[in-house]
Amino acid sequence: MEKKPLAIAIVGCGNIAGAYAKTLQPYPQIKLLGATDIDLKRAEEYVATYGGRVYPSLEAILEDEEVELVVNLTIHHAHAAVITQCLNAGKDVYSEKPLALTSAEAQGLVKLAKEKGRNLSCAPITILGEAQQTAWKAIRDGQLGTVRLAYADVNWGRIESWHPAPGPFYAVGPLFDVGVYPLTILTTIFGPARNVTAFGKVLFPDRVTKEGVPFHIETPDFAVAAIEFANGSVARLTTNFYVSHQSKQRGIEFHGDRGSLYLSDWQNFHGKVEFSTFGSNYEEVPYVKEPYHGTEWSRGVLDMADALNEGRPQRITGAQAAHVVDILCAIQDSFQQGHPVAISSDFAQPEPMDWAK
Image (cartoon, rainbow, N blue to C red; front, side):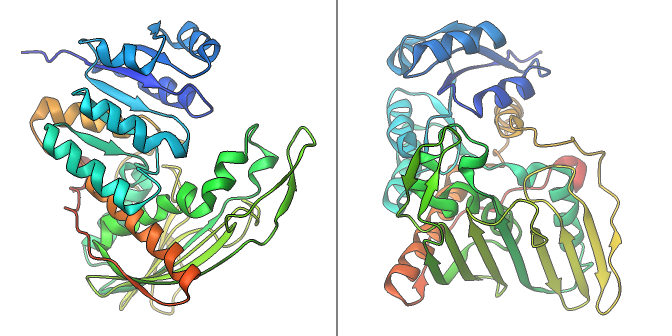
């Protein structure tokens, strides 16, 4: 029997919301009922382009019995409150990253979802991309031997050079905004982290928006961390809102006893994957499947819909997202306090995509 589409509504019609709607449009298993925003004009423009109706408020979405999943695309600081409200109203939730800005909030959301019997999922979902799945399969298949070290670089440029509203990004800093991407990939492959030692600093405190308005930042725009995982692997993570996207230090390198693997892009699904045996030159690794060009932002929502239809666990879980928040908070605590910080939370590692097994 054919399954009915998953009915969703979007909260927050900012910069990323259009990318979600565009990448959801080809999939009949998703039905967009509508959207809301604190600025209703943005919601009106959004549904005029992508369909559905304008909900006057989040409360109106939660009162609509037809809505099964709320896609939370609000700003970072609103995530925990919006997710809490949705779960308490009996809705499943998919949220943009990060899940929350503190460990207590993040773990509390996971607990609340369990208590309410609801599904909770959170970006980033780039581990589901073809390049990322190709890299993970090479590691699982033992091509590198035992992987003992990874280098992950997030040189994310200066937000004010491209985003019309850089303030919320600098308020949370690069760790919570983009450090989550490689951390989600690393925890998927290595499992939970157990210890962090870090350094952070404000490199470039006084900046100017695209409109020429000066602003000052206080959250570190640079952080570097050494992360030890339960499986014994170690990763060095570097994040900043200072160095250009064109930096030659980018992506993730995995180094094992037999060789090394380079994933050139932790975000886009068509990044290069290259392998070299120890001491040899890198050669390109064929993708396990022809890649989506760019980032298919909706892939996490699609996996959630398919998991519900197929009666299987979803690959992108609130528990893993909360563990990533624990790592972020441990990094922050470490560079503020000047000593290593332990992490104790766990999560179930996801299954690879069926086409990458």
